[in-house]
Length: 185
Image 1: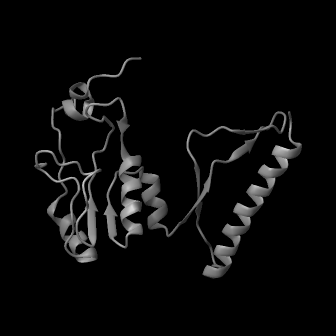
Image 2 (image 1 turned 180 degrees about the vertical axis):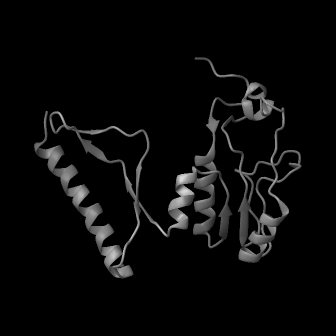
């Protein structure tokens, strides 16, 4: 399927229902962000200055607030599709430079329910699930898997949690190595 020109992307054309392009952060949210991280740089400003590219240009200051585009666009002059992953990668790079970063993005209600219930989130990566029919292992999910831990009474120490995560990663790697060496051919 051929790609649409940039001006025909839904993001650039606006919402099909009302034609609106931008949704600015409400003042109460900006006040909350300022309370948490102080003054901040906004790599997704409105109006956007001519020639400004929030993903490529320098992010000034010690704190950043990102209300990124909620969709994907074709980068001007290329066929490269840019979406949330690009913003997340840049936010992580800025965090590694020592900056505080707050990013907002809509999530499913059930994610909010888990957060409000105090769930711990553990990324367990690309899981090869076992088939019920023949025990064959295969990656069946389209995205990496996240474990959501809702604890009852006992809560392990941070050290126990870290050790458990390390052991899980180590066991997964050992299983992968075994399957590469002795698995089905």
